[in-house]
Image (tube, rainbow, N blue to C red):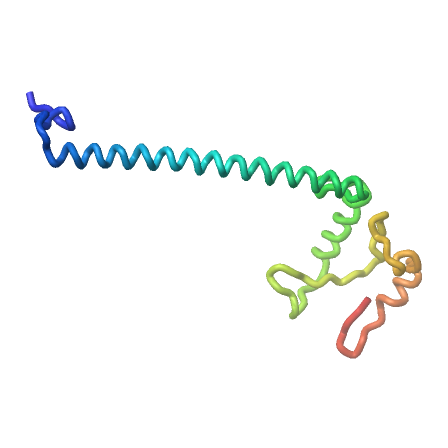
Length: 140
C-alpha cells in the first residue's frame, strides 16, 4: 500500500519535509496575524458604533430627529413631493440624480420649515407668484 502526504516520506532529513514544515509555520503565523487583524477591526467597529450612538444622542438632545423617525407631517410632505415629481414634465436641465419640479400648488408646510418665507407665504400669494416667470424661465 502506497502512503501519501508527509507520512509517505522517509523519516530522515528530506528537503520536502523542511519545505512542508516551513509552509505550515507560515500558515500558522498568517492565521495568527489575521486573528489579530479581525480582533482590531472588531474593536474599531465597536468604537465607531459607540461614537455614532453618542453623536446621535447629542443631536436628539439638541432637538433633531434621527433619520428613521418620520412623523405623519413629514410623511405627508414627502408624499406630496413625490406626486409633484411624478407629475412634473421633463426639463432639459434634469440630470440622472436630480429632476426639476413644476409646482402647481403650495407645498404643505411642516413644523420643520422655519424660514421667514414660510411664515409669510400664504396660498393666495403662492398662486399669484407661481404664474410669474423670469426672462430665463425661472419660477417660484
